[in-house]
Image (cartoon, rainbow, N blue to C red):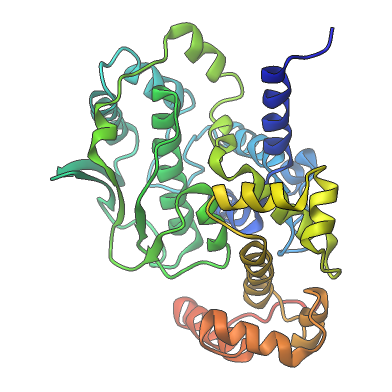
Length: 368
């Protein structure tokens, strides 16, 4: 029996999510607590088919979710050993069960915040209404990290916002748009992915994380019941990492095709052909998702450039060639337009910051 239109659309959406990838920066952050405890991550990485050899590579979302669950099982800590005390296995399930049965999202989140204060006392989550807007704030209740730019601290804020926001979306059965998010650290190399996970309007300043959204979303009714929760918890809590913004599926697919083809630069006609779409349809789909082929191509190159300049000592000329630039000077002009400084200045600034954090000379990355 041939699948009907709805089944075909569902299959296409699932295929897009399966093809989605995660920046290596998210993997590094997730491993930070494991390393701090003296655990060798190699067996877990091998089991999930993830290699850290190329810091600019990307990880399929399903492998990332599998690593998420393996780390939790290894540590018996659903917060990845990031905090002063472990978050016991089963906390995520009880968080969800505590939210079940609430009348509105506002009520459900209030239950979630009270529970998180018990199992995660180092970070404090709160929400407040301000006229027609609402703000979700995540603040440090006590200092537990090595410094403001500690990868463990960066990942802790990324993870908790993704967990709370992802669970909220699931309970109301729809995406909840974040108008903006202010993250309390310097822009990380993998921040281009924030547009796919959180919002395009991300800033990096202040001492607390502040996510803004329309306050009428708090009045949405809870639409999930116990049987639905049972299905949702299969593969949890790593499953929460699979909940990428569904309104960005075409952006994800185009970005991954462009990345895989480098140093060759695919045209929009070539990408449309690989996606079995007309060029006009692809253009319209990207426009519907608030993007364009040119913006995706530029963001893909920028993402890789930031990652390699941050984590490797790869020569600038070789990096430019890997990104498909005809010559190094063209890459220089592009990078200055992105960051306001040359690649060498960007790398030197990071090295100086690292040296200040460690109290010594920064370690030189291994030349690739």
